[in-house]
Image 1 (cartoon, rainbow, N blue to C red):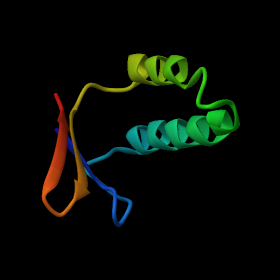
Image 2 (spheres, rainbow, N blue to C red; image 1 turned 90 degrees about the horizontal axis):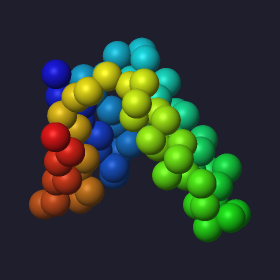
Image 3 (spheres, rainbow, N blue to C red; image 1 turned 135 degrees about the horizontal axis):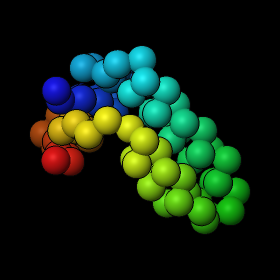
Image 4 (cartoon, rainbow, N blue to C red; image 1 turned 90 degrees about the vertical axis):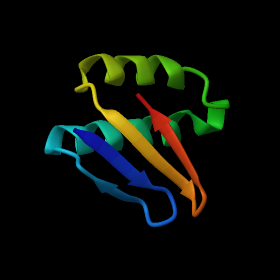
Length: 70
């Protein structure tokens, strides 16, 4: 299954409820660590990545740029 995220519209497609919860956790971690220069955010990302299902992820950065994580 492929997850797809459009940055312009903030739309996430192909995600289960658990996948959506993981995205919310990553967004919350980013907001919480922003005042500290995102120090410690990588640790949270590794934790969420370890418990999340493995998917191909496509992130549409703008109209002509798609970032793929396999």
